Image (cartoon, rainbow, N blue to C red; front, side):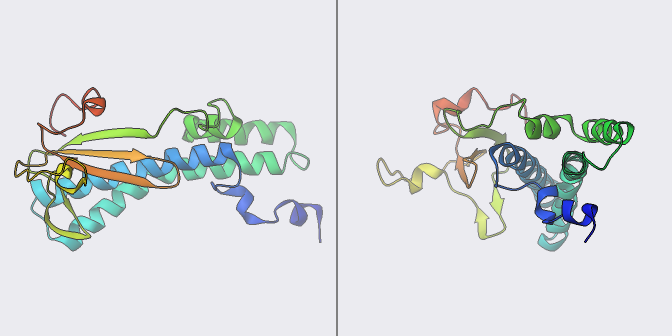
Length: 197
């Protein structure tokens, strides 16, 4: 087996994964972008363009893939340059790094450690979305109710439209809540967009 063959084992070293905190931070960033793109496109396709569920799902998948393609290419080039540093000349090494940074600088900085590890964060990354027609999820029929109806302590029978969606990225899992305007938690209200998305 040649030096080059030894250098590329295992193939996982070229992909984003949870094996080290820097790669995990980059993976969380990319997953967040994919989920955002999927949710936004699916909602638009179903509720604004009135497409059937299958077409909306396909459109949303295309959007998610488009949102992360450059990030995965950047990651692969960056990791390849790092792994193959001993067999690449300086010009090729620099060209791979420059190309990776041009594709997705944030992911390259995550992998280099420039953005920390994310492990010292005080809580999950939170994103808030507004949908005037409410929110429909593919795994559950109908418009989602206000999450206040599902909370055991202080449970209420809220019938107002759940126009807010709050997505909390905890790294290894997501939590999603749908809230009416009156019950949107105060700690998330400052993150709410000022106009419909």
